[in-house]
Structures are given as C-alpha cells and as structure tokens.
Image (cartoon, rainbow, N blue to C red; front, side, top):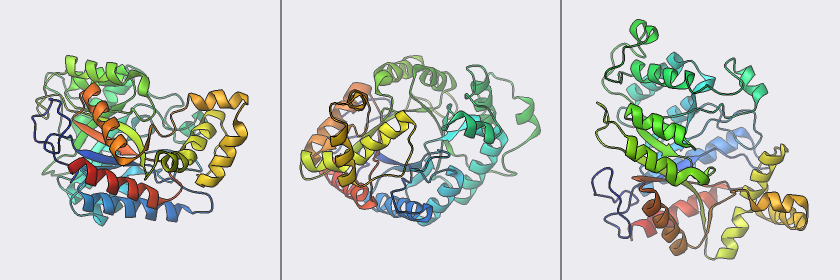
Length: 358
C-alpha cells in the first residue's frame, strides 16, 4: 500500500516501507489522437478506481482550458463523478485556478462536494489562469492571473467561506454576507499550489497545506519547500507545516521501454512551447517526430523541456522518488504521467504501489 508513513507531520523519513511518505496521483484526463472527450474522462475514471484499490492517498484532477490534449476543464464536475465512482481515496483539484472563478463560486462548489463526500474532498488552488490570455478573457475574469495583492485576498475569501477564516484577520464583506453552504458539518482540505516561492510563503503565512509543482517547475523546488517550512505559522486548521511535491513518472521493464513510452509527453511539452497544440500521439509516432528533430534548432528546445522526469525501471524510479523526498522534505508525493493510453498509467501506479510498500 502506498500510504505507509507513520512519522509525525513535518518530519522527513525515507528508505523503508514503514517510513515512506504517502503516494497520490495527479491526472489531466489526457486526450489521445483519435479519442473523444468521453474516452479521456472514462480513462481517468478507470485510473482513479485503480488508484483507490491500490491504496493511494489522493486523486487530483487539473484545470486546463482550450487544449486539444486535455479533457479536464471543470475540476468540480469531474471530482463529483470520481468521488462517486471510488470508495475511500480523497479526490480533489490540482488545482482550481482562482483567477478564473469568483471566490463564492469556488466556495459553493467545494462545500457541496464536501457535503456529498464528507472527509474525502481536497481543494487545491492555483494562481495562474491555466490557459492562454484569450481563453482567460472568455472566462470573464483576467487575462494575466491575479496579482500579488489580489490573489491573497481572494484566497482568504475562499477560506473564510469554508469556515477557515484566518485568526487575527477581519472577515471581508463577502464572507460576512454569504456562506458557501447553509449548514456544514465538515470542510474540504485546502491546499495552495505553486511553482515559486511566492505561493510557498503565502501558504506558510496562512497556515495551509502547500503542494509544489515539481513536475513542470523544478528549478525552485528546494527553495520553495524550505521557505514554506521556515516561515510557516500555525493555524486553527494546521498545527505544523505539511507539504507535497509532484513528479512525472513512467515505469517499465527497462529504461529503453520507459523512454519510449515517455515520448508522447516530450512531444506534448514541445507543442506547448511552440504553440502547436494537438492531442497525445502514440509512442511510435512520438519516436519518429523526435528522431526527425535531431540536429535542428528544436532539438535544443527539447533538451530543456521537462517531458517525463522519471522514465525508468521500478527500482530506479523508487530511488529517484526517495531522493526527491529527502531533498525537499516533502510529507507526501504526487505522481503524474502523460501517456497515450491509460493502461500505461495504470501499470506505473501498480508497479510503484507494490515497490513503495515492499
């Protein structure tokens, strides 16, 4: 079972089944060539059910808009479905992009999810729009995200609406006048997501959980995690700092096979960088595309793209994840993968679950 850690929150332990941190899953509902949105969402449902059976701690879904390779556009809707389709795993957002939504809408959606599935809902909140400026404008919010002054205020509104008002801060007019749900009995677990020290320090100041997006922003991982722990202020909801770090992982029988299966993620990363968005290609087509780029200017771009960070055998993947935990001091790990087919993602989860606990 992936959830095997028994050490106190805030400490760091790796290396043995009794002390390894819990594993969770982030899924984007990737849409492959020739597939439909229904196919992608059905695959995510299948993945969530398998993660549930394997003992993973959480299953998070992302918010992306106007992307031909991602079917996860509305986390709250997908979370409701996934929570109803699983038994015990926590289900949440990784994350809801606050610039796209009024605080009251986010509060109402997640208060309702928590009422439907008490003790199983996570609200992960991000600061970026999660899309291009034109789509952000179409969402009727802002084209460039919330600023350093606006975002904390809106985040405080969400917390207040969920009954997690920060001590020493007067409730805003919104929080005084509205409630997210008439008579709550519990509240979702709130996380702040980020790939910079800004989000880490804000999470620390508010005393909420922090998740660092190492899978696409690895340059500030250690600085952000260190800042979160050093500046953390206890809150009514969280007495000690609690942080999670993500990593993109594909596991196979050999390094060569894993690299081949990770090819589509590299092509997708390149398409994002060049603005040529398209559904996820097959590993064979990805290999042809990547081979055709060797020696070109795009070859240098590819060398700097994250793609899949850990594409290797099970023992090597476990060792790499343990090193990440040790370096970052993470209390939990969030694994994700961009693959052409869900069977590859399921196989990776199965291999990791067995090795993490064995």
